[in-house]
Amino acid sequence: MREVFQQELQEVQERLVEIAELVATSIDKATRAFNESDVSLAEEVIADDHRIDQAAQELDELAITILARQSPVARDLRTVVSALRISASLERMGDMSTHIAQLARYRFPDKVVPKRLRSTFFEMGALDVEIAQKLTQLLRTEDVKLAEEIRNEDDKVDDLHLSVFDTVLGEKWKGEAADTVDATLASRYHERFADHAVSIAKKVQYLVTGDWDPDINAGL
Image 1 (tube, one colour):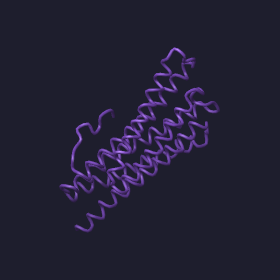
Image 2: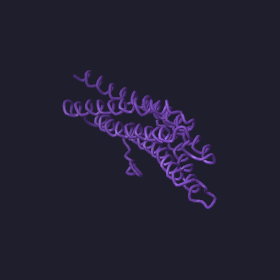
Image 3: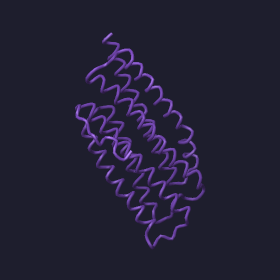
């Protein structure tokens, strides 16, 4: 029975990595669709979101089954409970990717944001992609050094997010109302994507070290 239990725990980790890989692919396609006004890529992201949702649901069902049948304790219990919460955050990250892709689709063939903000969103998107890739590696290896790197990248996303607000609220902003709304929403989606990654990184740290951060879900 113990061997079967360990196999189930290993399956939980493997499924988390698989979902994270789907999310990383989703944000990569979404940011390219957004920055390049590529409606085909945007449609792919939107159509594939159900794969992330389904994978997260199946992982949750597995975790609940393990809790009910195995009654895990200590590190094993942390693994299963953390998996439930991480899968929810990964699902939300997939939603953020979809929202970014939807903006690209709605504004096609035009760009979503005015020219003066495009370099900011290009950088923000690149950071989100990098964060997603590091998050996948973190879930695969449980190397807590990656958690710190993810937080550092998130700080950069936060700075860019604030710069977008400074721009659209500034006296020199000449964008239409739709431009202001689109830029604000897009910036928020990018920022929330990174925030969820940080939340997951903190949960992995808890899983590895057993040290609980009371602010683990702050801002979400």
